[in-house]
Length: 228
Image (tube, rainbow, N blue to C red; front, side, top):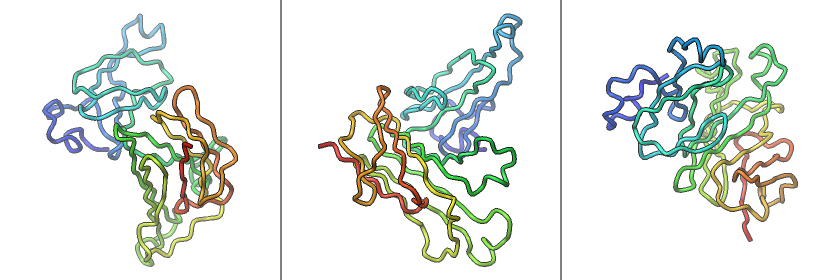
């Protein structure tokens, strides 16, 4: 959790902000801290004030719709089952797939979905850290991995950031899906290391959904987007 002014030190709108925060450098969270009026309470809603930093594109995490940051205060009535969470354009979020999993320790090596949120230049970057989640070998034996992700408009790649790491991804820890938000054109085809991906689609909401082939480790993503 980071205070807003740590991520946006040049924006005077956040010098006194204590009602929202950044989670890492990609997620903006404005928690529900106001007591709802009786009317809003009867509707199962709560009023939230928040501010989106200027000069960035922001995606509502639930609807995936974009909003331009203006550094002006916004007030919304938010349903009980929703929070004010925005993703900064230019981010890649690794999402652990954990349906029907009741203990995180049982799911740490599950498959992943990569969510790509494009900025105004149609670019995005992100990273994924991994270790065994149990031992201290990440400190004593460099048994960890850090994969970095990059979308440049024509392709999406992942690279293991250090050859020194001794960590091996479990066979179950693969990239199952990739979702790209903010594309303007539908691709003709999608290739993973030069081989055509059989299952992908471009939705009416300008979202590219790719079902990855089996056994693609987090540091082995090499997608090419072909338009013609």
